[in-house]
Image (cartoon, rainbow, N blue to C red; front, side, top):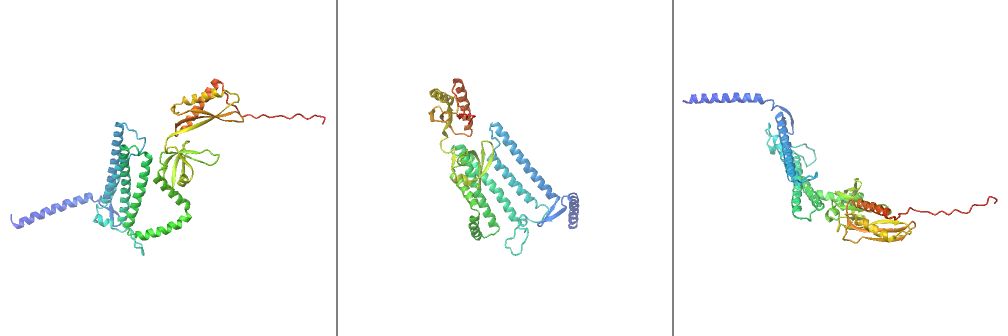
Length: 401
């Protein structure tokens, strides 16, 4: 084959290749048709299709993981009662992060811009301001958000594994550590983002110090609650899940509630009536608060009772002790006794003293013991008197006077 034949064969090959490319371009031209441009990036139908496919795959992956995770829990006969397990949440957040990165990378399809050039695209420019936001700042902010969430859940997973080996790490302590880790990670993320904006941190801290002093005088209560929040988290005297009793003042019934969440400024509590209260943290650090879970859970309780004058006090004492011993929550290895407190206006004032574990529903225990006392008193004829008043009527006046 001579040179002219070789050149002719190559020309035929190029012609066939060109025609195939033209046909392919005609077939795929609709997918690559430019719809609009934004930040030097051309968006076509293919870009939206890729984003839709990536989001769908991420959604399917999360659903499959949730399904397999729940199936594994059912096989292991583990009841999590609606709690979000740290390992499960961590895997879902990693999938969300990968989905976000793939969506950003998909913008490079149908564009001549490289990924680095796309990140350096300015969002807008403002005259006289040295900080010019770019796409890279939004990307860094999104990455910091995902990485912060992942880091917090890594801490939670570590604490879960630590709790499985150490019984001292309860839910309250775990919550405190996670909250402190969350605030620390968020502060680090904020400093990294400000550094990416090329902000002078020294000048910024100095400016914030001045503003802090200025606001401290006008927002004393707010700062007092914030400081109290850190005290609660670091000290650990009151933790999530604890039962607390807050004194409401002289004559008022104390508020008994369960701690649901401790935030920086406020604490969320739930009362026995299932009412949710949000109270400032300073109230828990500056007022008298009794923590039922702090120290020993064994507590002494009293049930006051009044019997009629002339009643058999020894019989009443025996029946009261019998009523307390009949309840399964009362500690039988502790002394149960009855005291005669006073000779009252309407009867003999006594009280039944017993020991039981301090619990969220201790009033129900007291109520059940009172029902048993009423039954025994009726059976043995011990009378609980009504309040009595004796009225003396004066002599009638003579009609002739």
